[in-house]
Image (tube, rainbow, N blue to C red; front, top):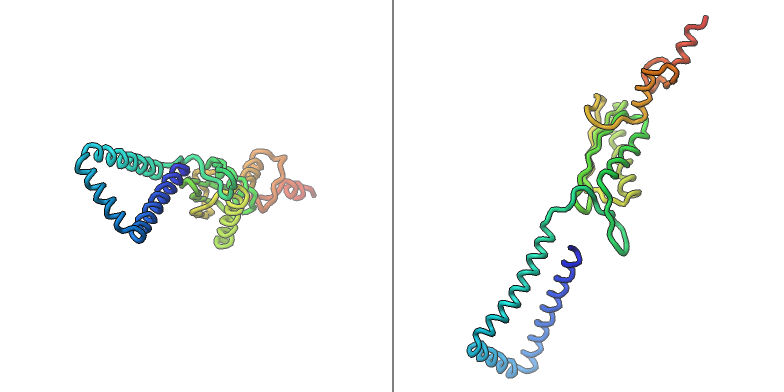
Amino acid sequence: MNLLNKVFVTLSSLTILFTAVALIWISWSAPRDMETALRSFALFAANNPGTLRLVVTGVGGITILLCLLILLAELSPESKDDVQIAGLKGGNARIGVKAVRDRSIEELGQMDFVVKVDPIVNSSGSAADITIAVQTTSDSYLTEANNVLQIVRDAVENDMGVKIRRLNTTLTTEPLKTGYPTSVSRHASLARHDESIIVPEALSGEPTLAQDRSEQTP
């Protein structure tokens, strides 16, 4: 696609450049020869209309075909399942949007204030549009929003090499209906079903097992 575009633009530019230089040079160096040539061409066209039509039709048809191929390549919808990796030298590479989503989940899941995360990643071909809903335990929305955006940008752009076109996040303390629970919410869930697991009070919001035993001991 890109190669065809480059070849067509290069050949067109060279043809136009050569034609313009030749016409300027002939008009200044040999005006009479140019006039003679134009008269000869007009005489040839008058005497051989069929041949002229074939030549014009052939050149015009090839030009139209190349233009249609370029338009088709440029306007055809690109794959939404992967996105281009930027900054490569000597070739092209693409990565699936699922990998970008999974990496965002992994990085945000390590944050203490994140309970659940629901990222949506769309591909625009050369860049990614990322929207992330985050269930948080903190009400410091400005600080945590900056943290979320910086974490995702560092992971996706700096580590994965994927350019981000748009990056938006929504933070809430209300439970998300969809998404992926992080280690914080998983630990709290396990603690409610297994008394042998000690969960810090900051995570579960409930007294720990060690505290229960200390209170029962006289």
